Image (cartoon, rainbow, N blue to C red; front, side, top):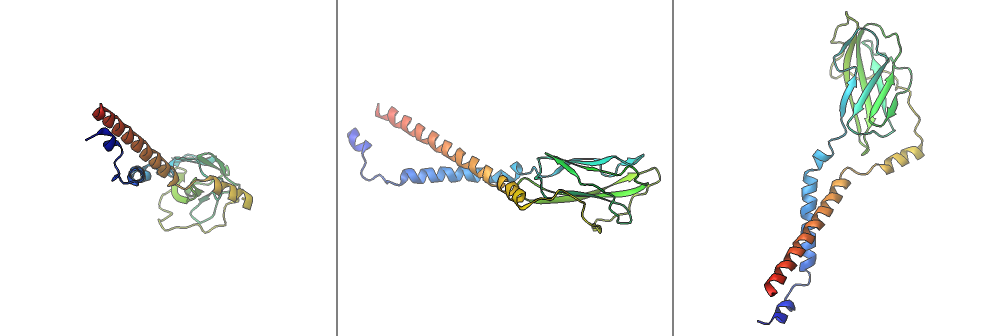
Length: 207
């Protein structure tokens, strides 16, 4: 059969190339989304000072929480509650990247305290948690149960205006967007490599 007929096959489907592109892109997107949970597992508390359950000889100067990734400067707070449900925090916390610091009064009496924190991750989702620490040698644990909630007024914090909220939320990309984009790029790369290999194979056959 002449080579010209092989190169210009009238029965070749015109949409075959488009179908291949879509298939490769979907393949890359599926692989990327399949690994998305691992890639997005960044919005969690990594360390705290004092540590959960730690007993201190004297009142700490501050509470420091460090997260896996920077948090949004919006809607964050820390409460340090004693066994009578009184909030011992007097001033606003300070957020610097992935670290949230709450200054404390210098005269916390002996006892058990519960740290209740709340932040907003960079993808716009609020996360919160709590833990206890002890001050003094005679302080006894067990003042709080798992269902205990804050019964005090919110900690004074920075006032976030509508313009700040809109800016912060617009700057936060949806969590699925990055892996989806990487998947599309990966799929396109696979398609380009596939087409290059096919051309090389045809060239070798023709020669």
